[in-house]
Image 1 (tube, rainbow, N blue to C red):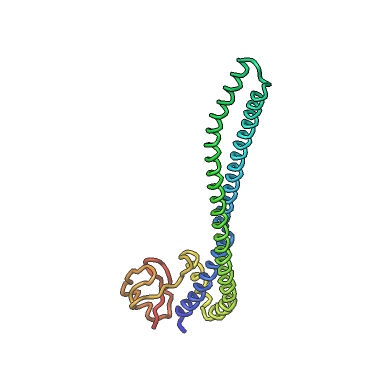
Image 2 (tube, one colour):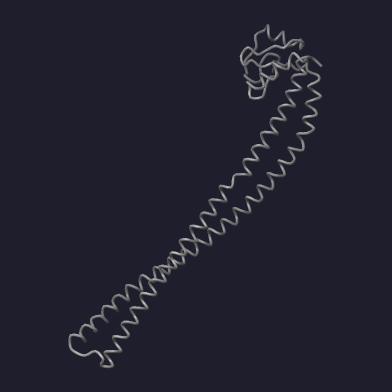
Length: 235
């Protein structure tokens, strides 16, 4: 195994470890994100508040109508029984009864609207609860899949680290500081394979002829003049 191919093999394993670790971390973030369920629960809470308000509005109208009806019925009974005497008093009572009948029509219309509002609020709550149930079911399904994927990746990390230790022994010690430095600077990729013997696969820049000759030997560490990564030529 050549000096540079050992670095490239190490890079391959490190890239797998990086990919697994990134995915595991992303899954952890996803598992903590309950925003969709929280929003669905807020919607249910709001629908419940609206339903309570609709019931209260209807109850108040019905109570007001009942009170008005009782008062009008009493006036009519008192008139019929002769308990209200005097022209002015009788005229006032009759006027109040007429006013009640007019208000009753208005109250009936308001009660009808309130009943429709109550029905709409009940339908809204049912819909919100159905959406919450569907959201919770989907979240459970997704989180179960996430946990399974995370467990699989975590199980694969252990042998990958063992593999890395083996490949690390094949790398010349003086090359490790440069490799580690480039990994930090180049988004985890320190070694770039050369395509067609002349092009850096990472930055897609064609290499000068002198660099093309240098990398074919595989004995020296040659850097890409464009991106600065270690160049690897597969034989």
